[in-house]
Length: 102
Image (cartoon, rainbow, N blue to C red; front, side, top):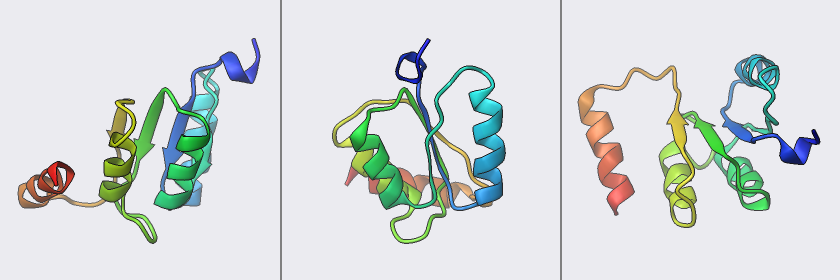
């Protein structure tokens, strides 16, 4: 089985330790795991090769995770898991959902 035939899981987050550990764990399950440390880099990787799943942090340098999500949604319905260490009160989650509708 080649890397091209493995499902792709794109990790987008600003913590290099988390990215390294998550990449190691996910790749051991047979996935190809590209990583990006910014929303712009993640979007570029996603556009180069549509992935099967995106794991996305909300707090990123430059373009944040919500804007990255919105741009991915403009051309893909790929499943996206938002994984963040940010404490998010319900007000923040509702505001983020409103930003996606805009």
